[in-house]
Length: 339
Image (cartoon, rainbow, N blue to C red; front, top):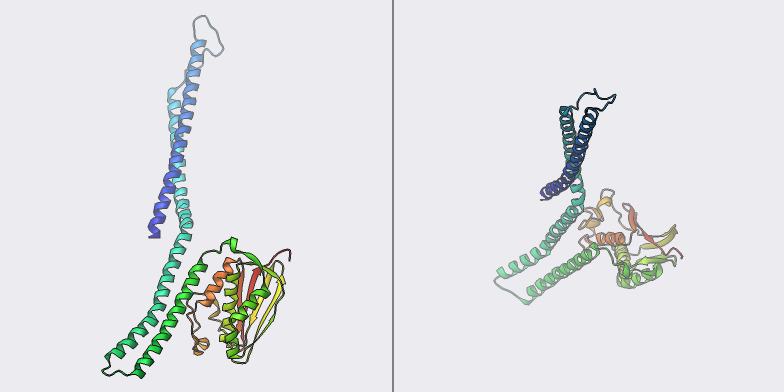
């Protein structure tokens, strides 16, 4: 589809360029031939004047103008203009094809991203739906039903429905953050306030796993959307807690580097394999070795959402990890310059 569109766009570029080129060539040819004809007439007039009876001029014996030379000059002009237009045709054809590709590339990338999003979402939705259908079909095939079996089925179905709700919520968030945040929602907010809100949201999980969350945060102001930043650090701290053993420590630190605030979230969890690190911000990606052995629920959308939030805030995120020792996620965000 895009190859056809690229060829059509390149053809339009070529048509416009060649139309302009041919028009200019016609104007140049017309001007040049008029000048040649004017020179020929002027020369003929001078010869006529100098050869009139009673007139004497040292140029009276000059040869008459040769119209054949003028016609040959016109032919050469036409040939040169044709060669120039042929060169423009070849060069502009290649350039038009290249520029058409550059023009359509963002659109192609966006469509491919949307197609991948739909395909990934469909695949992830199919799993819990298939599980729901299978459980119900197995139950319906049974000849005798009792309250205990029905209760077990309903509990299992409720778990799958909850999973679907989590997935749909994450998909909505991801779609929301696909678009650049409205700058009008950006405000000055301290990193301390963001972390305080995040800790309050995750208090139950922290208590459940008895995680010691230590923060050494500079009371520095950053610029951004408050809800998005809370969502960002909620995702990072939630992951750090989930993948850490009970009664371990998670450290949150920050420092100022030039015009950025650098925040580190370090856990003592199972770590991430080197081969997985380049892909952890990909949509629906989950490491398939040690991290999945934990049987932690999720669809691999959290870090993808975090990356989108970071991009919308003109920041960066990176990770360093060692298997069996833990991971450190580092976030760079713009700070208030006069802070």
